[in-house]
Length: 234
Image (cartoon, rainbow, N blue to C red; front, side, top):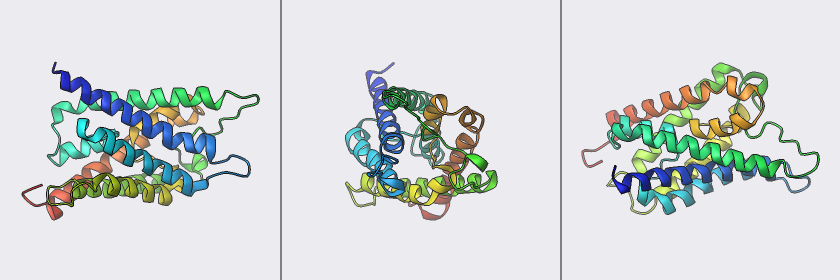
């Protein structure tokens, strides 16, 4: 196996670790801090900033996917080799699990610690706004589809150079501002998996939706972009 392959997997592991630790960490450690809570806006910005910083630091190595749905969507759009999907997805999921484990150690490191929902995703009674399964499914599909369109458009050869990471990070920020009340925002199966393994028991039983919906949405976004928006130089 080529040495560069290990570097790509390592970059995806680190980038997904950073996204999960930074985004979910802001929700678990800072969002509800008495008198200084950063709220939905702060958590949304935290997720966006992890992508911006990770994309510029690690994107040149692996492409900066940090998300199984993104990798699958890029493969569906012809921008990524399907043969590389398994390695990327494993690295991303392991990175998210490692981040959630470290975050759990920190969050429980004080007397009387209560991790609450531990930034997990859910629907119905486990949705922050009590939105049902259908609403959660539609929300995650639509937002992941748009996310893929933004990623594909901002990384096209004809796009303004050097701004893709910023556009993608801002898009993820907006996605969180829209959907935190609905699902606590996934659009990323790895991000959902890590916290689910350390959070409340319901999170694992509802995890299927946060794999299915982002993957379906990513494929839809790729199809829309290729059919309606792409040029031959993409």
